[in-house]
Image (cartoon, rainbow, N blue to C red; front, side):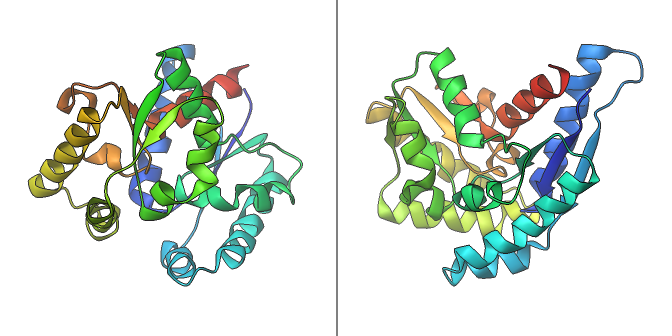
Length: 229
């Protein structure tokens, strides 16, 4: 079994899901008392989020790269960045590593292609929804990406940072997400990407008629397949 490196803490609420899901899937595959070989570096999210707000992406990349190097030196065979937004600096982090980063958007594209999705709704932080570092990897594979209107982008972003990152689950937040998803479905979305690792705390497949692509769960599945390959 290969050793999985997790670059987590952004936020720690979703890092818990990564840890649980990876271990659950490993045990399902191997049985007995088997669990995953995981090395976790958990970052102070306040530092990273301040960099985001100040548009200091290179600085945040330097911070994450240092943690990533520590995981490689400790024996990780490959790395997962346990957040969609910070894949903006994935190329910067990869430059200082000799082990691969399993890109969350690439894992999600494979899941979309497996379901023959050609047009998909994307929900996430305002950075993920509006900037090209994430969307373009999907568009480049021939899949159209729909995002909410400007007002809803702000609302979704607020719920993520003010509620979900604190582990706060509100019915009002859920109702907002479901309304936004329904409006994007009316625009032709054939599925919805939960493109922030915390959204799965709020929205599950049972809540939505469209196919739901929870990037946290997808990322974890790909990690397990790599670990056992």
